[in-house]
Image (cartoon, rainbow, N blue to C red; front, side):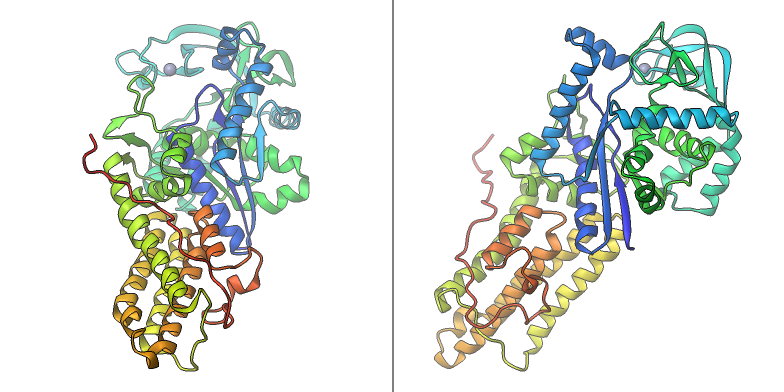
Length: 512
Ligand SMILES: [Zn+2]
């Protein structure tokens, strides 16, 4: 793969950044770092969704005009992601003038092609969802999300001929079985497409809502939020130029939560077809997080805040936990006891101990100076190296399948082996015999190479820890030695740093 375009949904500025949105960010940030390090040309996009009824109402409540209100909230979102260290390439806002211009351009194109028509329509409308519901979609006559009764409204609106593209989209799904993944979500969309999907109401009269993008062919209307927000995936690339769009669009990988499968799996591809644009490469759908078995909500006070996690256990440990504990596409449960258990076992003990033992011995036996390797390696040395070669290979294939937990499992299996290698080679015993000291130097040299490899392998998942390991090994970020082959990084006499506690154990006894 030589290029990849990664996107998150645009976050709705009326909500706070929480574990659900942070999870999509962690996944995409990890992939962006992974692909960049592999030399793949990467473009990573996120941003905020800022139009619609709910925003207009919240702005009115805050006594601000909608633009001033969204400026403030969008900046807060961005500041949160920045302090989490997410390395996106571009942050788009649906109020950005280039986006507004492109949405109008696309609307004009689809309108002129005859795929947008004007019609009178009456239906049950939920103001909270900003959309019409069919009787079938309601639960006990109420909106399943808001648990309120929708209102019967009748008005004239513009409609997108979505149904015209239904068969073509279904065929695309059949010809590209991984277009939407994992498979369960593909089947969900395929089932939707086997029933009549109807046309999509894409306008709101200004008499009811003014905070939106005006239809270029009727100034009495603004466009429906989805026929605005979804287009960001293309407008952000077009903003960088037509060549940039041509270069990245065919490699588009959308990442979303399972609540917005229909707009991304049905509305968006049919919109692209109507606009004469190629479809995205994959729609990747992740599950939801609960906390201690319960749905997270503000009223229950059990929401998990990424910034709070950063303060208590550190961003890297938080990233490690959510990626190691969840299976992409399935729901996961955030439990404090599993967080503590994983932190202590995998980070404090397994990784933390390996690093502190090796650096402590290097300091104690050789003043921190790396010793040379002999011309022939002992079988256990070859085995240690092989374990890491295997981990790197497995990591690559699990990343391609979005199996982040498996990728980490593979790296931790190698870390585990490195700890066993210390027990097996017993440098602390060997050092007591003067004639075995050069062997101790070799063993530690191999272990430093193991730590260097760990630093490289975990960098996409735990960027700060990877950087700290590199510094402890006395290597600069752009030092070619950092990426050298095993045994070819450290010259004799290279100085490594004394040990440091990377992950202090979380003591649980006596608490609560
Ligand atoms: Zn609703």
